[in-house]
Amino acid sequence: MEGRAEKRRICKNEGIAGSASSTHASIEGHEMATSSGYDYEVFLSFRGPDTRAGFTDFLYTSMIDMGIRAYKDDEDLRKGEEFGPTLLQAIDQSRISIPILSKGYASSVWCLKELVKMVECRKIKGQKIMPIFYDVAPAEVRYQTGGYKEAFDSHRNKNRHNEGTMREWKAALEEVSSLDGWNMLNMHNR
Image 1 (cartoon, rainbow, N blue to C red):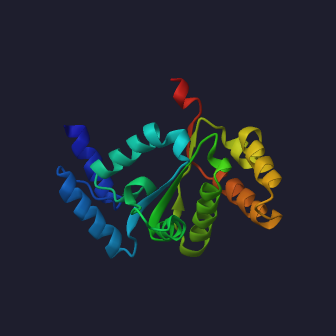
Image 2: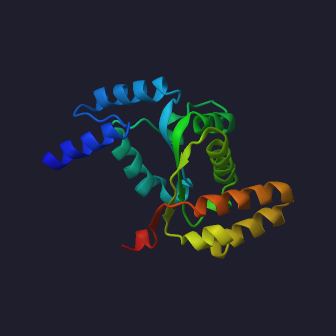
């Protein structure tokens, strides 16, 4: 119990609301996020088939339980809403973005678009990006080798996106992979 109280104290001192009551924490977290000009404290970017049902759900639930107002597309997107503009707006309205860079992340055009938006918000608004390298080495992301190279080869072969767009995606991957993050290589083998 003492450890949990200490964790709440630390979170509050860092500007993240925590409370014994998850409803109270959610309201407190929302008030803190919106009073600082942000609708969300954290935006989670992930490729659904890679991490949604396990790691991302656990991370999201843990944040909500601690009173952190987090955005996760399957929880916060409303049915019938156009998801593209809503996702990009949620990134813009978040204090921190956490891309969960998994093996298949670069195969998702929307993950790459989200990453470009995160980098833009970092440069323009000073938002934080805190990457998680989930079952992928940071070097694979940075240099687009392995599955990341295959994803870009596939994008190129489909000929749906021009070279300028793909250079923008690669630059975002390089920038984000050079940030200090969490390396969780071989996570699903544990």
